[in-house]
Image (tube, rainbow, N blue to C red; front, side):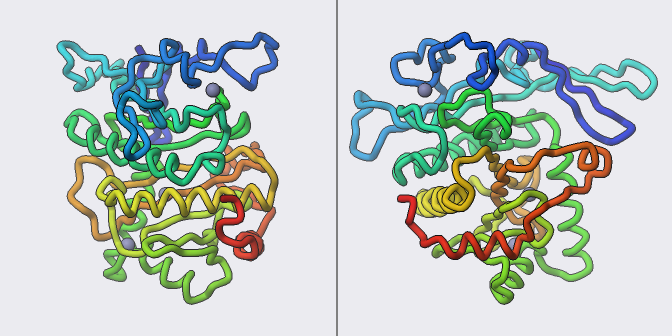
Length: 338
Ligand SMILES: [Zn+2]
Ligand SMILES: [Zn+2]
Ligand SMILES: [Zn+2]
């Protein structure tokens, strides 16, 4: 059981999750080998799957390609009584406010092969991974106690991964995370004064300028953001305005998976194998389709450390100008890593 604590001083939520300390770690220097819980044959090491995906045409008797399982060491848990996930508020007095760490924490095991990066998957496998994100977010949205579903991927120790086998995670929470609230508030402010979506506007501007533009497919475009926090930070947006990732069609998801896989391959071609994160920012569950918010994927290479100044100031120091990173990424031919 975990606990959500609100830091009133900074308007920030913190999850206190003691059981997370017990999870196995491929990257720690204990020297004690453990078997990979995500490899085929070791399914018993993970909770039963909530969704399983097979390659098209393969009967369910065939090998699974993607498995979605509850996280064995969850940061948030279904909790509550009688399956009711509505969190129990617990005002502790003064400024201290805490509630049960209710939510859903799932792991998307991306491949039956023990591979490390999204770029190691076949385009078909990557497509199933993005399809699973859509399906799970659409299912979690139905739970009225949940406010937000965050899809994210950690690769490498510097990216916060504890297991190396390619996987991503979904944490659905009873609150809208601070970063998302901040983005939506900024977008709302721009919409109020300019009457248009600031993401659509940015996309137009980056396409026209070209210097930070990385590439595009039929429905998606990628650029290195003007004020990117990390070297080679790359954002992917649908070219047509859309606020909900989970309303993407299967064809769009296949196209998106191939596009993101190629971008990560290009970043790896430029920098060598590296730790990275990506996150999907989509709108909160309990909102109508927003004209001012535009879903996107942020790919965050982790070749620099987040240090004292970043923590203290909330201001990042990026040693590689986004224009330079974009030029390098553009110079690597599409599909080179396929
Ligand atoms: Zn494995
Ligand atoms: Zn837009
Ligand atoms: Zn974002």
